Length: 102
Image 1 (cartoon, rainbow, N blue to C red):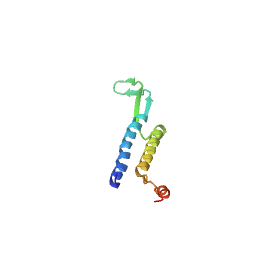
Image 2 (cartoon, rainbow, N blue to C red; image 1 turned 90 degrees about the vertical axis):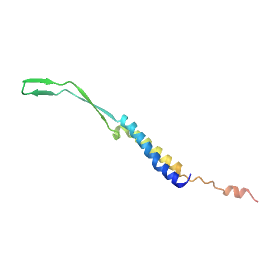
Image 3 (spheres, rainbow, N blue to C red; image 1 turned 120 degrees about the horizontal axis):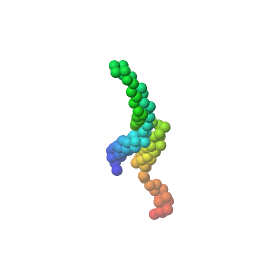
């Protein structure tokens, strides 16, 4: 693999994995907030009506308290991937030269 191919992989693979991690964190960072009913007064008809309980669902993928492990796994994967991609794969031939006397 030449340098240009490595550079393209070094950019696009972490970006693709980021969106995958973002999707997972989006669903893991769900917050449910229950609200009690509020009293609503309509002055024109003189009646009071109250609403019931309702729940608000918020999705926050950057809620570090609930999704930190997803982002740590993402960063670990990216670091290992980049290290393996750019690791020097040359074999040291010094032992072969010493053992081969010819």
